[in-house]
Structure formats: structure tokens, C-alpha cells
Image (cartoon, rainbow, N blue to C red; front, side, top):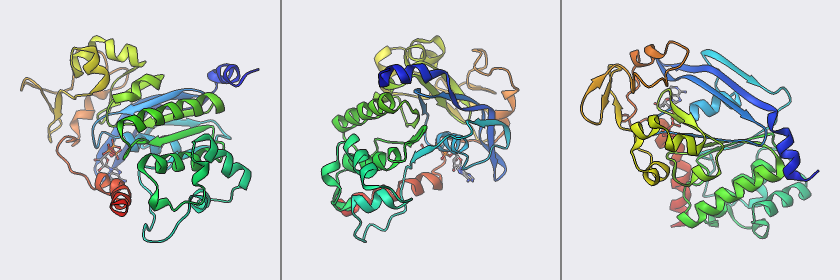
Length: 307
Ligand SMILES: Nc1ncnc2c1ncn2[C@@H]1O[C@H](COP(=O)(O)OP(=O)(O)OP(=O)(O)O)[C@@H](O)[C@H]1O
């Protein structure tokens, strides 16, 4: 059986499932009411603005954060490869790609070189990490994750610091990793951008699930168009939230009107009692929250070192 057929055949195998999952910290819900399944061979992308709960949701998936309500079920022997948004690395110290690959555990030379080969940077194995370009660095992080042959890859902003052409190449690479290994992939992105093309399922978060579906379904759905604009190209390539969560939990829409919910009559708030989402203080658009600054610190450091 070809790799592709094998990946296809295994598609029904569910790797992780979140049902009505939420995380409550410091007196508020960071994210709530998340339903999410990832099957083997499937690419699921979380989109949404800063502070929307994308990383928090990914951490529930990996088990780094435990949900405060709802359920999270993981396939028992699942291996997870995580590509973080930032790395706590001292960029003033010399660090080769080879050592970067082994920072989190031992790895045979063969597996190490195979992974670098798969991401197209085998020739850089002895290069200094701080001298890598943005795209090469992201490839090194991807290689580090796939070297351990994960069942599920979680990629937090995999194209940051990468130019437009490099971004397209990286998404191609991520898709090819999915096809050749059959792993499931959870990606996080700030906006739809190019991520749409290679994604099976898009879940848009804004403290809760705003909308979801295949890229085509999402970009053509009345709900999506209502939320994000009414031209398809705009819908696919740029993602605008047309509402602001006020500190008191109510929602101000683009036209200035204020309601208790983002889109009270369109059926997104399914099943559970989501009304109480908006009873909490999730003022996404206004907080310049520490985690964002924190997350990007290493990238900025790295870029400074490149400068
Ligand atoms: N451990 C924590 N304790 C308290 N608050 C937290 C914690 N982790 C994250 N937050 C807050 O939860 C909210 C969601 O954060 P999260 O990192 O999930 O957002 P995000 O969608 O990934 O954002 P970005 O695009 O900026 O990375 C933010 O307001 C953040 O400050």
C-alpha cells in the first residue's frame, strides 16, 4: 500500500477529541466551549486574533494545560511533536543545528539526518542556529518535531518570521509531512492567509468557537461572510473580526450596535449553554497581554541576532 493510501486508510483513527472544553484561570475563562477532533492524516487549523485562546486550546490538546470543564480524550499511545511559538534559547551561545535537534532528547544520527533531509536543510546540520534564515529556522524546528515520528504534530505559528514565498513553501512542506507520515496536524495561525489551502478543518476562535468547517465551507458560509466580509478572496486571505468583546462581556458589532452575543441568531452557539461566555471578561481586542510579548521574545531575539 502506498504511503498515501495508508494515510487515507488510517484517517478514521481519532487522535484527540475535545468536547465542550474550557480553561479557567485568574478569575476568567481563557477559552470555553471548544469541540475539536483531530484524526490521523488530518490538518486542523485554529485561527483567531491575539488572545483568542488558540495556544490555550493547543495546550489542552497536548495536555500541558488541563481543562477546567468539558473533556479531552487522547489516543493512549499517541506521540506528540510540538513546534513552539518561541524557544527559550540563549542566542549568544553557539548552538549548531545538530545540537538543537538533540536539546530535548537523544536521537540517532540516521533519524536526525533523515528529519533534516525531509525538511530540506540537511546541508545545514553543522550550521550555527543563530545564522539561519527565518525559513531555515522554522524548518529546523519542524525537523526536530518530526525526528521523533509523532502521531500528532502541533505547530504554533509555523510560518512566523518567514516571507511570503517561504510561507508558501513551508505550508507545502507541512502538507507533504502529513502525506508521507500520515500524522495528524494541529496548526495555529493568526489569520486565514495561505493556511486555508492545505487545511481540512478550520476552527475560528475568539474566546469560544466562532465558526468552523472546511476552508471552502467556512469561506462560503453565510455565517462566515456575515462575520468576516462578503467577498470570497477577502474571506480566504484576510480574516476580520467584525465585533469587539467589551469588558462587561457584551459584544459591540462593526455597525456600533451592542448585543449579548457575537451573533446571537446564527446557530453557532450550539448545544451547551454558551450564553455565559459573555458573562466573563474576555476583552480580546484591547489587551496587550503578556503571553503574546513573551511568546515572541525568542523570535525577536533571534531576529536581533540576525541583524
Ligand atoms: N496560564 C495562564 N494564566 C492566565 N492567563 C493566561 C494563561 N495563558 C494564557 N492566558 C491568557 O489567556 C488568553 C488566551 O491566550 P492564548 O495564548 O491562548 O491566545 P492566542 O489566541 O494563542 O493568542 P496569540 O495569537 O497572541 O498567541 C490571553 O488573554 C492570555 O493572556
